[in-house]
Image (tube, rainbow, N blue to C red; front, side, top):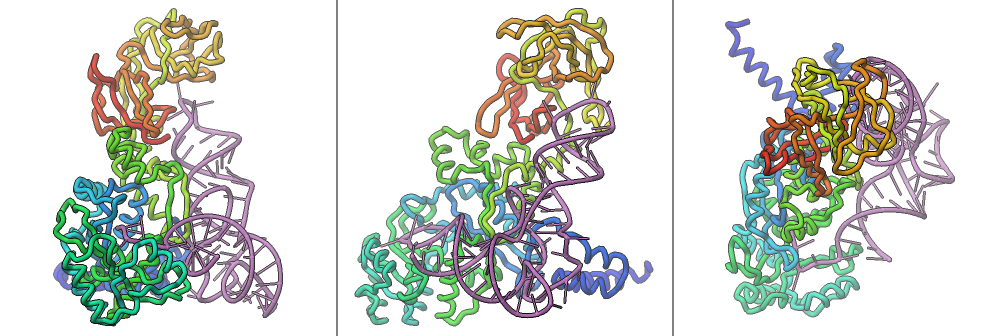
Length: 535
RNA sequence: GCUCCCGUAGUCUAGUCCGGUCAAGGAUUCGGCGCCUUCGACGCCGUAACGCGGGUUCGAAUCCCGCCGGGAGCACCA
């Protein structure tokens, strides 16, 4: 075989290319045609995740997709869907992804802000979605003007000078205004006046001429370009005539050579608009695919609210857990791989869905549980002195992972002084309990009083089947602060080994959940700061 | 109100295009048991669904009609 290596390699790569070019179902059929056990398995394999239809007319290696975020905040969990679906198709077809910032002028309420360009690029990087190129709509404004002329040339647009409210009302009732009957020449004249600063903001817009009797009121004579004086953070006041999203994409999906537009179904009317414009100009545009609306039950904070709270300082920046931004999830130790699997499990379904965060947690747990070491932590600790504590039991060696001995052990400090969670003490006065992995003790008859320590009595070391309590030895107990999902802080004490914990490490605090270390413990200054991930 | 989209178990999802192999598969959740020093993980078992009503057909989750329910759009935002 070796002498023919080059030949074999060519044969293999061409065969692989051929297979890759086939749509999934056809691959299975071909495989079945060849026989063999794999064929049966491939056919019978149950689908574990969402369904992704093949891209129509896609040529492997030549697919061009685009991501078009509006730079007004960090990417949140919902954007994750946009990212990973496009990434999925890019991988499937060995295509390209263009990052196109949709930074047209926006509105008073929706402003472009410079800081978000870099922020979003970092989020993409962290999510493992590297764009093949980056574009800014704001750099491309002059490009849209000739396209506007082309549309006017086809008698498919007119300059409307109605106030916005009247325009809206007419649209609702399917009424044409006086401007609609403009001749092409008049429109060109008016259009030039728009460009020549003759009109102020709100005084003139270029509208598409569709059909005022269109059954869908949303589709009647939509606005293509309008005038704005807002100072754009990248290009200032260089341009006054700005395209609306739909028009800008009718142009850019062609100009940038986008082969497939994959976007949320909230943008379906834009499809129709783009197609209408392409039809007018006799252009064949790319096909559209949509996904439905995804909500994570716990992530109820709207982007605009997150924005306000980050600005006001109530939230601790864009990585605050309450924002449910991608970076906040990363901060919590939830991997982008888990997020991707979670997101892709919904496929391209057009249903509007609401999913509990638990589903995401389960995905993450699946990935980290086997490789995450266990540590003891006690919230709201009460100090207990154990009378008769065995001499010479100053330390105890525990497994880092109860099911995986290969993950090693750690040695924690013990002694007669231990901390127990107040909650664990409730209703157990006078009973015998076992300090997990250590000894049995009899709790005192009195309830714990804040500020003072309780006295308990050592009973035995026998591994009894009695309630087992989480404990932390007073010797070496490490102050810990947990930042929770609601932005709340829980302080408590962790076992002695936590003194050596460092940022980025992920632990499972037994009976509490997975946490990610954010800041070292600094004696006398700061507790070990961790961020709660999930149970 | 008008337009579009969606409707399979608690929550997601496969199956719907090309009706039978679906007495409906998978994931997650929940309950039980096991493993016996986590309320975690793992293993086993279990509960649980084709929105409703007609029709076509030997046969419908799949096709047709009507209804009901949910979401989005009707911005000179994206």
